[in-house]
Length: 206
Image (cartoon, rainbow, N blue to C red; front, side):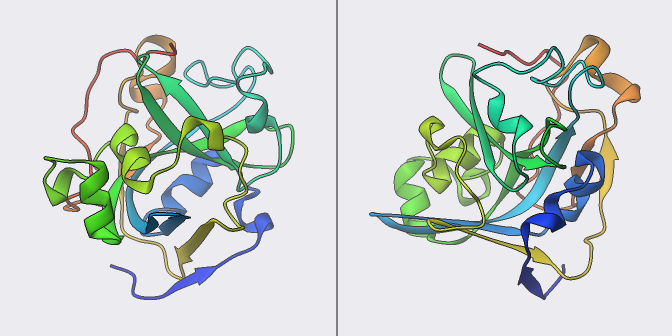
């Protein structure tokens, strides 16, 4: 585990999402609300590229009102609704127009544990942020936050000064042309409790 974390500027995030994704492992994302602060150490992420490059990406067919944030500045939050009930959070990568992002798939609550427990009643501490929807709930970040700047309040994002050891494999919940061995863009820290179970079924874009 990397001990040292540091705040970085927007240009640090302005790189290919497949390069950025593993560098976010071990990063700590905090969100302040009226209820208090929750911070999560990221242990699992997935990279998604943009227009015409990545069939699993929301941006594959071009810009829409829903995915417009992906076409903007890096280090902004792209939030989307899935399965008609869950919010998932992404960090926008690359330069404006590149339309790529990194999905925050899982992590461990390192600050605000009691508040996270209130938001996820009945969940074990291991499961509070283990999975993208659970992570969003534990942080207290709603769908309406899409477009927020993760480098400004109410957020704080610090990244490791040295990369974490990681493993990679096919993205979870993505099948067909956007999944499988051709897109081994899921990255995780082995042995971390916040890593979610791998699932092969197709992701819903509802």
